Length: 334
Ligand SMILES: CC(C)(COP(=O)(O)OP(=O)(O)OC[C@H]1O[C@@H](n2cnc3c(N)ncnc32)[C@H](O)[C@@H]1OP(=O)(O)O)[C@@H](O)C(=O)NCCC(=O)NCCS
Image (tube, rainbow, N blue to C red):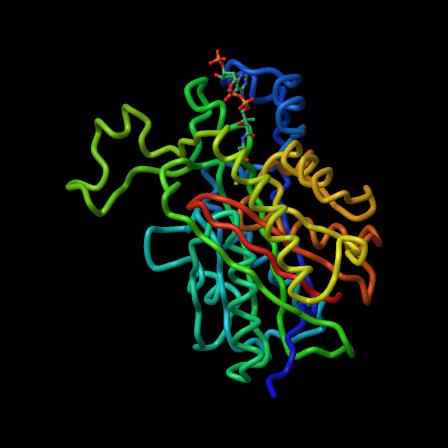
């Protein structure tokens, strides 16, 4: 019989610079009212420009905090799964930079690219490796530096106001507590919508991968069909939450806390209503961090635990939707 895996500890880290909506108005035509009303975001964190801080650097801080909260020593980590859409460099992946900065010995280090669903996918990978007995302790990291890659002019305002920098990490290991642990993971993607939210260049199907013309046209910045993303997100998130509960013989009433990906507060509110969740059954923190993509779930989970909203024994659902489109949920007993 396979053993069960458990999240033994979580840690979050955001850079200290607080970027308010008001600050953005000096760069683009927007207002605090527009941003708050459409997205619920009041501020986000950005790394300081020119300081050389990348996704692996934020990830290191989150990883240290997760190790401490898990009571797991660095030497016990046997594998790393790193989720990001904003790697330090095109290649190699950020995982090896994080490995080197943490001082981890040679081991499997895996980088994955599932955008906002990255952490949910990463967690399910760690779950499989721990359950099979391949390794005991996996460091799972979701980390993003968006601020260096967004168009902060009026041209890019629909995307630029949404994203923030940050990192979150979890230590996954063999379950310590009876009944606690990851119950199931539910992962999806539908590439028919790949261009609804994407960065077109650099592209390996072009030569050169990035041209001056591309840069002038802003094709190296993310572009998004916001309405399509919104429409699909609310449907898929509600669907996969129901699926995860049903698979394990639970209903919404059994759910202690839903940690939804923080893309837009309106998406979370829509989902909360559609699922019929009370305020104490869901946690949001997008007002302070914006959308930190692969980092949002661990950042939000960490905060919900610290706030006492999640207690040992609670049924917790982590759910995400993002570019690809990709979506998924992990149901666990905390
Ligand atoms: C992005 C989003 C907030 C835009 O809201 P919306 O109601 O769909 O707004 P629209 O895109 O129709 O734009 C309405 C107007 O606001 C303008 N606008 C866009 N961004 C703006 C900004 N930051 N400030 C002010 N005006 C803005 C548009 O240019 C448009 O102007 P127009 O009517 O003159 O053309 C919304 O679509 C959304 O949140 N979608 C989901 C995005 C998401 O979650 N992405 C990450 C997924 S992981």
